[in-house]
Image (cartoon, rainbow, N blue to C red; front, side, top):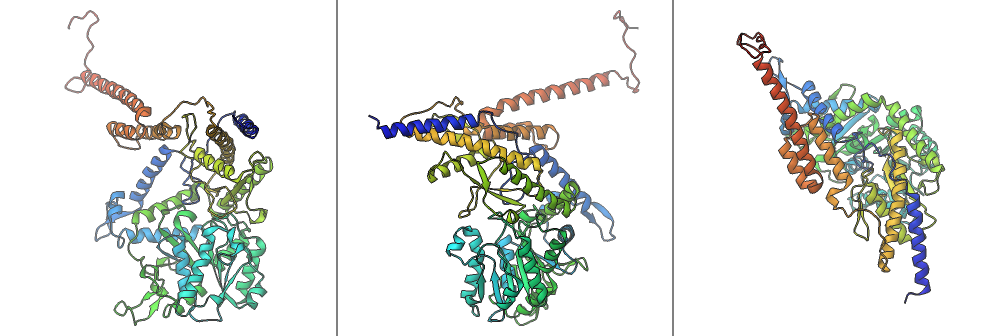
Length: 610
C-alpha cells in the first residue's frame, strides 16, 4: 500500500509536470544563429556549416592573394597555398610575414599605443599570466609589495569565486613560497573580487605591482568606473615604479568605462590574454602588452629572475647566442612586436602553427570589416548586456548572479535560476543539467524510452564550479542582440522541458511511467545531428567542398545511419539527373553542328533527305 505522504508526493509531481508542460506548450522558440556560447573560443559568427565552409574558402583565397612566392629578383611566381603553409617552417617566408601581420593587426585594432610593445608566445592566458609574474616580481625586494584583486585562496571570501579565480592567487602564493628569495608576506589580497582600493591606500601599503584577475570570464563581472579610476590614480602617482597586470581575456571589445578611461587602461596597464578568447583565434597562444616602464622592469629582473624561466616563456633572451648563461639578456631581442618600427624584435620560440596565426589574423580582419572599429564592437557588447538586463526585468525565472549592475560584464553573463516550484537543491541541479542537455546536442531520454532531441542552440554553457550561477554564456559584441534574446528564450523553454523530464524521472522511481508521446529515437538521429548533416550536404551542393557523393554517403552512414543515407541517395539521384541532362544537352549541341562548325541544316518535316 502507498502511504498518504507518497500519494501527496505523487500529486505534487503530477502538478509540477503539468505546469511545466503548460509553460512549454508553444514549442521551441526561434533558434540562435549558432550554438557556440561557451566561454572558450569566442563565436566566429558562422551561422551554419555552409557559411563556415564558405568562410574557409574565403580564408584560403585571402591567404593565396596575400602571401606570394617570389624568386631572387622579387618576381611573383605564384601563391603560397594553405597546404603549403600548414607544412611550412615557422621561420622564414611566409611565416615571418604572417606573424608580423598578425601582431600589427592586433596592435592597431585594439588601440594599443605605439609606445607599448606586444609579446606573443605559446600557451594560453595562464601562460601569459605566468610570463608576467616571472618577469615582474623582483626577488627579495620587500619594497615591492604585490596587490592581488581577489580574496586569499581557501578563505571564506574566496569560496564564492570558484577554483578558476583562486588559481591565479594560488599561483602567486606558490611562487612566493617556493622561490629562493620569495616571501608570501609580500602579497596583499582584496576583500572581495575585483575590488581596487583608493590610490592612497595602495601607496601607503607599499604596493608596487598590481595583478587584476578578479573579474569577467568566470564570474561575468567587470570593474566599476571607481575601481578603474583608483587604479589609474595609483599608476600616475609613480609611473616609473607602479605596474599593473590585468587579465584582458574578456575585456577587449567589452570595456564598459567609456573611451577616455578605456584608452588610459590600454596605455598604462599591461594586459595579458589568450588569442582564442580575446580575439577569436586559434587556441594555444598568449599575448602580453608591455608598457615601456614594465619592459624596463622585466629587463632588470631578467639577469636574476625570481624563478628559472622556461625557454618558451622568456621575454629576455641572450644578446650573444654564444653566451647563453653568462652573457647579457635583453627584452629588446625577445618575441616582442615593436609598433613604432613595425617589426618583431625577435622570433617566437619553437614551434608555432603558421596556419593558426594566419587564421587568427584573417578572423580579425573579417570581424573589423563586418562589425567596424573597436568602438562599435564595444557598443554592441554594451547593447547585448543591456538587452539581458531588460529581458530579465520582465520575467521571474532567471536573474543575474552579479547583483551590482555596473559590475556586470559585457562579454560574459552568469545567470541564476529561481523556480518557486523547486525547493530541493538536488532537484534544482538535475533540472539545470537537463536544461543544458536540451540546449546542446545531447537531448533527454525520457523514462518511457522516448528521446527528446537537443536543440543545439547553445553548447557548453556551464558555470564554473564554485561560482554563484547556473548558466554562463558569451555575449560579446560579435553576436547580434537578437541572438542574445533567442538564447534567453530557448533557455526558458528548455528549463520547463527539463523540469517536466525530472518530474517524470521521479514518478518513474515510484512505479508510474508517464507517456510523453515522443517517438523513441536513437541519439544518432537527433534533430541537431540531422540538421548538421543536411548543412554538410547543402555545402557540398553549393560547390564549397569537392567531397564526392560516395564519401558523403559514408559520412552519413557513420554519423546518422538511417536518418540520412536515404537523403544522400536521393540527392545523388537528382545530381545524376542534372548531370545527365547537361550531358544530353551538350551532345545535342554537338550533333547539331557540322564538321566545319556551322549548324547543320534541319531535316525536312516529311522525313525525306534533301
